[in-house]
Length: 458
Image (cartoon, rainbow, N blue to C red):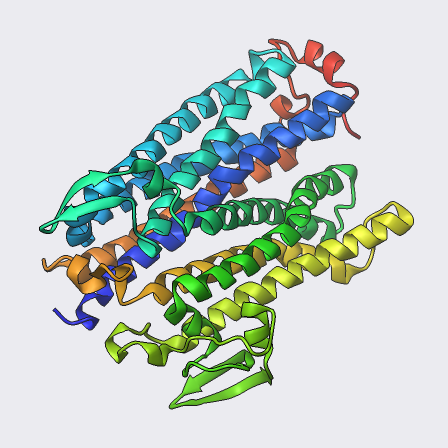
C-alpha cells in the first residue's frame, strides 16, 4: 500500500478531529469560565454575572452533548481506520484512553448535576457541584494528549518478537513529549474558550449594545484568556526547542531547514519550491539563535533522513506554524492593549479597532489551535508512531473509506449547523427576556433568589 493510498483515511481523521477539537476545548475550559462568572456573582452579589453563568451553562451542556457524539466517532475511527496501530500498540494506549473515559463520565455526571441544580441547590453548594466538571475536563484532556505525545515520543513498553510484553503506564502517560504538549494544549483550550466568549460580546458591543451585561460578558472571557496568552507563548517556544531536539525533521519542515548547517535564517511565510523560498521574509541567523541561543547553533535539516522519511508538503507545515505563532502574538497584543488602557484609565479601550480585534479573537484562537495540530500531525508523517510504525502500516486495507469520508463530511456539516442553530435559538430567547431569565434563582422561588443575588440589572 502506497503512502497516497492512506490519504482518504487521513482526511477522515483530520475532518473529525478538526471538528471535535473545538468542542473539546470548550469542554475543557468553558466550565471554568462559567464558574468564574458564578463566583463573581456570588461574591459580589452581582445579578449580571449570575445570569451570564446560568446562560453559559446551557451552552456548555449543548457543547458537551455534541462533543460526546463526535468523540465517540473518533474512538471508533481509531480501530476502523488504523487497525495496525491498535493491533500493535493497543496494549500501550489502553491505559490513557481508559483514564480519559473515566474523567469524561465524571464530567458528564457532574454537568447534569450542575444544570439540574440551578433551581434546587443553595448558591455555594451549586458552585462547588460544578468544580468537578472543570477538573475532569482538564484531566480527560491530559489523557488524550498523553496518547498523541506518546505517538511523537514512544516509550515505556517492552516489545519481544513483535508483541508487547510489559507496559510502564506512568512512562507512557507522562512521556517526554507530554511535558510540553499537555500544558500547550490545555492553555490553548482556555484561550479558545475565553476569546470565543469574549468575541461574541465584543461583536454585540460593536453593534451598539453598550450595556453592563455585554461588558461583563466580554471581560469574563477576555481577561483569563489574555492573562494566559504570554504563558502560552513561553510554553510554545519551549516546545519548539524540544521538537528541534526530539523530532529534528519535523522542526526542519516547520522552519524550512533543508540542509543541516549553522547560522540558519528564520523564514517568515513564503513557499518552498525546488530548493527556493518564494514570497518569504528572511531574517539571518535567527533560527539558530532561537534553537540554541546563539547564531552558531547547528540545526538539523531534512537532508538528514531519506526522502521517504520526510514530511510531505513542507510549505503547509511551515505556513501553519507561522500562522499559529503570528495569531498568538496578535492575541498577546490585544491583551497588552487592554492592560495598558486599564492601568492608565481603569477602563477598557474605546477605539473600535480594539473591539474589532476582540470580535475576531475567538476565530483567531481557533485557527491558531487548528494550525498547531496540523503542524503536530502532518509534521510527524510518514510516521504514526515516531520511528516505529508508518502511517501506511497502521492504516486499514479495507475499501469504502472514501464513502465513509463523504458520509462523515455531510454528517458533521449537519451537526455543526444544528449546534450553531441551537445556540442562536438560546441567544434569541435570552434577548427576548423570558420570564425564567428575569432572575437567576438557586432556590425554588425567584423571589428568594432575587433577595440573595441582589437587584436585577437594568
